[in-house]
Structure formats: C-alpha cells, structure tokens
Amino acid sequence: MLSKNQIKLITSLQQKKQRNIHRLFFAEGIKVIQELLESKFELEHLFTTQNDFQEVSTDKKVHIDEGDLKKISVLSTPNSCLAVFKIPNEKKIQDSGLILALDAVRDPGNLGTILRLCDWFGINQLICSKDAVDIYNPKVVQATMGSIARVNVNYIDLESLISQTPLPVFGTFMEGDNIYKTDLPQEGIIVLGNEANGISPEIEKLIKQRLTIPRFGPIQKTESLNVATATAVILSEFRRLS
Amino acid sequence: MLSKNQIKLITSLQQKKQRNIHRLFFAEGIKVIQELLESKFELEHLFTTQNDFQEVSTDKKVHIDEGDLKKISVLSTPNSCLAVFKIPNEKKIQDSGLILALDAVRDPGNLGTILRLCDWFGINQLICSKDAVDIYNPKVVQATMGSIARVNVNYIDLESLISQTPLPVFGTFMEGDNIYKTDLPQEGIIVLGNEANGISPEIEKLIKQRLTIPRFGPIQKTESLNVATATAVILSEFRRLS
Image (cartoon, rainbow over all chains, first blue to last red; front, side, top):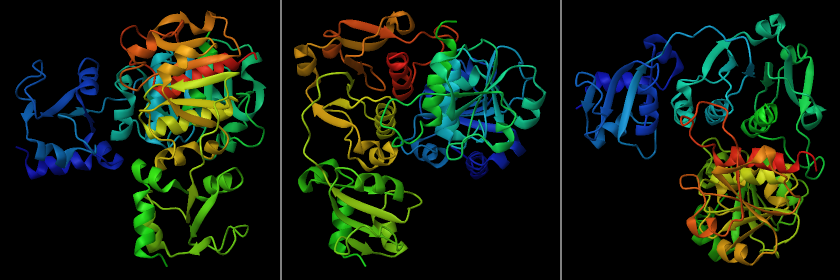
C-alpha cells in the first residue's frame, strides 16, 4: 500500500526540478531496474506487484497492487514494478577516446536511443549541453534499456568545453566532408545538434571539421536524418575498422 | 464547421480496419500534407484553421476552428491542419536494386523512421510482412516526414516472396558475418526483424547470408540495437562506397 506522500513524491519526480531537489529518479520494468541494480545506482525503494527481486532487501521492497502502480507509473500499460534510485553525482569527464556531444537534443526518445548507441559502439562518454533533455527524465530512462548504467553522462557548457579541448572536434551538418571518404580518428569529440535547428551558431564556429552523411535519395526532397539515426551512421563509420 | 459524421469518419480512420473499408487515411501538419499533395496522393478533404494551402480547390478545403481540429487530431498539440487522402492501390514490387524487407515490425515510430531512412539512402522499395504495422497508421504517417510519398511500400507474404526471389537475401542477426568485412552488393533483399523477437524462424531458414553489426561495448551487456538504428547502420554500409 502506498501512502499519499509516496505517490506525491514519485509522481513529482516526473519533473526535472523535483528530481534535482530530491536527487532521485525512477525507472520502470524488470529489465531496466535489473540493470540499474547491477550497476552503480543506489536503490531508494522498489515497488512491485509481484514476488520478484529476491536480491532486494525487505526494507527497500514495497509490495503494491496494480491500482497503486497505475498511480505512480508514466507508462500507458504499466509493467509490474517501479524503482526509485538516487541520482549519483556526475563523474569527471573522460577526456580521451571518442566522445559524443549533444547540442540541445530535446526529445527523450532520441536521447535514450543515442545512449543505447553509445553503449553498443563503446563510447563511454556522452556530453550534453545544459539545455538538452535530462537523462533522468522517465522517458529517457525507459528508452535507454539499461545503457544509462554504462555510459558516463555530463551536462556542461558545451561552448566552453569545445573552445578549450585539445581533442579534434567534428560536427555533423547537411554540408561538409563526405563521412565515407574522410579519415576518422579514434579520438575526438563528435557533435550532433538539435532536432529542428541542428548545431547552434556559437558551437558551429568552434568546429574544425564539418562532416556530412551523403544523401542517396532524390536531391532536395528528403528531410534531414533524425538525430538518432544520424548518430547510428556516424558512430558506425568511426568504429567500423577500429 | 465539422459535422458529426465527418468527425466520426475521420476518427474512425485511426483504425486499420476502417481505413481499409473507406480506402482513406489522414495526415497532419503543413510539411507532411504539402509533400503528399505534391506527390501521387489524391486529396479527399483538407481541414485547416488557417488561410493557407491556396493551391487546394475550395470544394476540397474546409475551414475549421481549433476546437474542431482537436476533435479529429491524434496529436497532443494539434497542428493547424489535417488532410484526408485516398489510399492508392499498391504498385507492383520493383524487384531489382536494393530492397528492404521488414518482418513483423510493429512500432509505428520505427516504421516511419525506417521509411525516412529508405528515402535518404535511395531505397525505392520497402516490403512489409502482412503482420507489420500499417503504413497508413497516423503515427507512421507523421514519423515519415513525407517520405511516404517517395518509397514504394508493399505488404505481402514475405516467406513466399523470399523463397522465390532470384535476388540474394541478407538477414541481420546478433550473430553472423561482420557487416564491415563483407562484400555487399548493390542488389538484394535485406531483411530486418521484429523489435522483440527478431526475424521469424520461417523466414530465417530461407536466408542465405547472415549479417551482424559488431558490438564495441561491453560483451553480453548491451541490449540489441533498436531496429531503426540497425537499419541506419546497415543501409549506410550497403551504400557507403556505391
């Protein structure tokens, strides 16, 4: 049974402001929760309608019914469990190897998918501008499928970072060097831009190498690639023969 | 002003069964509607809250208010217009060049994104198994961003097609030939599978070449790539030096 205060707290965590005040976020579904439990994330409470998660101590596990789960879930078809975790402190940025940087990516599904791509392609460091969607947004947490546990994410002033880094900085644009014909190093920062506006002018002027994914379909007709599918193509190309 | 019958008809088109009875579908938003108008799609009616679409004849254009638009829209924030188009008859399958085939892809956003990728990478023919999500589902139409006007889509018995085609057939699996080290032709059928279950066993046994996108992240930890991002990587790799 959930108290009114518990329901109020958990639903408030849908908002970034409340997550930052309480330093808590939540995840839903066995798979994602399992991955977070196995990793660095510290469990606050697990709410479940089943007799599962034997490894979780009884003082942290709360049995609830489906009606209660519905009250705290953001899913249209709630799973069987929801877990509240502590938001860890940001770790230091790893400033070597390949780093992905997102300039104002706003869609939670896109950020989740991109995090999953980082995990697949062995990118350990994701950097987001401060106006990008929050990684602990429930929709992002769901879309990451657990990758949130394995990729280091930092929110910083992207302009300041890029202007000071000794690493080569690549940006993806509608026009630039053909990504298939460019020598791509195994160290550097790859910048992708906002869904509607691309990379902001302040960041753009700091970018030394402009890359583009060539278009094979009819000229001038196709909308640009979605930022998550563009990320897939670019990470694949950076990694393919590494 | 919309009549009750118009509202009933348009909202019924959210269902595949009703779309097939009426042979109608709808699209929302200026960009998508514009692209459909410029292409082969025959307009039934355009409903708009603005004084736009001057090129549409007055007998097909209906001015409505925002309250009416809200009644027929599926968007949480309705745009300014919604258009009902006739569903065209399926064209003959183009059985040459690169063809993408989807086995039971169920998520509308994935199908829309994949159609957009086909458009970008110059894949003119998309084949879907009969149990895949309908291309005229409103969420698919929105996600295609107009690509629906430029890629030929057929729903067929995939098993029968693959067992009879003279083209080479490639399937994407968690294990197979490394896609980066395989000679990929510019003609063939590339099969991608369902979000949860991959390619079905009936189709799998007909596939001659198994391809895989190597994983660079921690072994056994990363969930498989999402079907849309896997499609992005695979189409990029087939096209990169063509």
